[in-house]
Length: 157
Image (tube, rainbow, N blue to C red; front, top):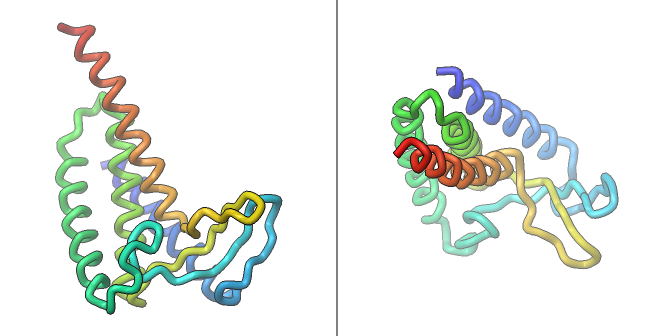
């Protein structure tokens, strides 16, 4: 149960930061924070890297359904995780929080609010948010769990 609190924390932080960004930044106007980091408000109607953002509107419902299905699977999976697999549990909880955070945006607005703009010279990484960061971090922990869990399994056999 304790890992669900991680998901809740991600959702709350994600929604608070998106609210602040949406109410304090002008759309597509970068605000310098430090070298290689801007805050730039953008609305993403697609998936990662704005994939399918110009698809005509059906993608909203598709990504909402996909996020809902993935969230249900993650909840079930998280309940079944062995208590010794903390990397896996943390990873699933972070991905769940991120998926729900972006699902909330799609449900309320029809797009995801992104605002973190990392760049080098004139090259910009696609804008992202706290939910996206949690998903990436969670995926990294799942990969780490695969290696450490496999190693632990090999040591016991």
